[in-house]
Image (cartoon, helix red, strand yellow):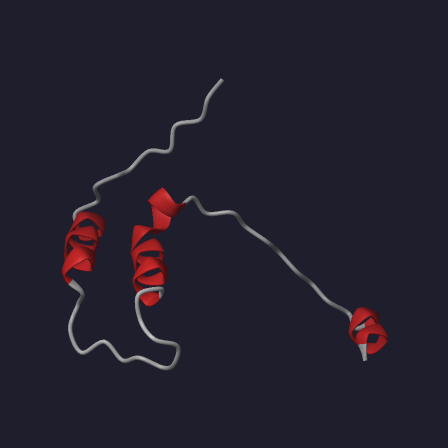
Length: 68
């Protein structure tokens, strides 16, 4: 089976996105760790996510500083 997968004509692109640029996904992945394993539906926006979404909506940036 592995050989069959390797023989396919794949086109793959991997992009790195800093967590500062995707804070909502970072928040949700951390939030998911506090929940039991399974499928969960959020019926309202978790409290900590609300401010992240507002910042994103208003274009607030969170720069990522790299050491030189």
